[in-house]
Length: 69
Image (tube, rainbow, N blue to C red):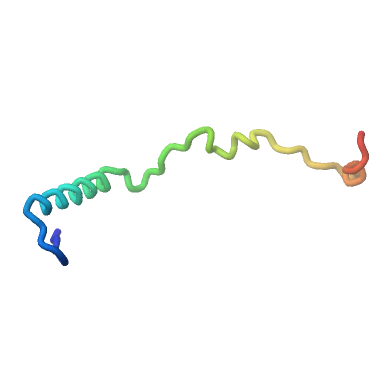
């Protein structure tokens, strides 16, 4: 890995701090599992909202949509 200073004149301490940040970010990125999805929280699971199937309307249900039962 090569780091090049494009502008300015940083001190050796500033370069060391910037390199430490870059290395820490690279180590954190390589430590994360790349292919495994994160576990889903039960609150964000859409199947909890529709846990049971909605009953299908019958052949004459269209006539009962307006009139109270």
